[in-house]
Image 1 (cartoon, rainbow, N blue to C red):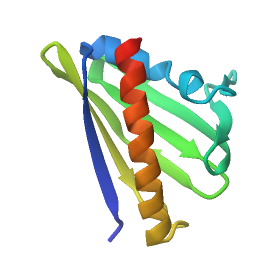
Image 2: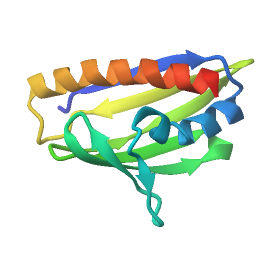
Image 3: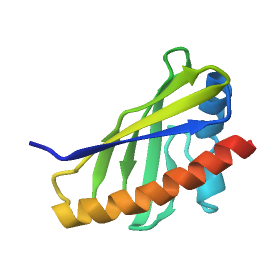
Image 4: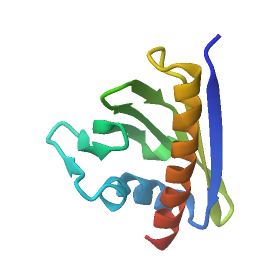
Length: 125
């Protein structure tokens, strides 16, 4: 059985605004982020050269994405769900086979910090 972790944050934005703000997060979190013609963001991440590509559907709140760095590849389901004047952002992280359990635990701590930064950026946008 594969290990996974689901992270949910509530942001002070309506769903459409939260969705749009998330798509603009990469250059705000990674100053060297650049987007290519085929929709991949490339940047230097905590584990070397990295890239990220969203597969989004705004009407359904889907912000699934692929994240690839020098150590692993992640397929990440992500949803933005309406919660009145707020939105819940739900991210599920499945452990890539190339990571050990301890590496996955380390990544979860790192990602937890990144998600808090993302929340602050979304709410300020």
